[in-house]
Length: 107
Image 1 (tube, helix red, strand yellow):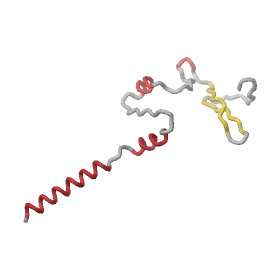
Image 2: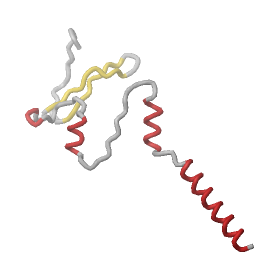
Image 3: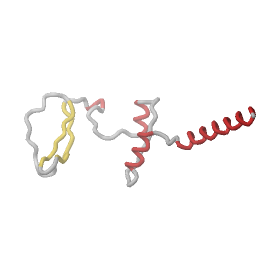
């Protein structure tokens, strides 16, 4: 906000507020925490570090993505899970071989 000021009615409810500018679209300018206890680091809006996240949720599976040109591809790949095409093709081939062995044994 540098040299500009924001004027607002008093914020009496605790929580996180977003200050945005509406010209053509809503452009986020700042996030503000109101009535939270800063001694417990409750009002800190900085992203968690890797170690802090693992301390808070120790049994969770963490997957980290890097920003870049492949971000959306990696994000969708992680949401969908592992590609099982090869596994199912091998299982189908194994069943086909078993069926052929059973047919050959019965003739």
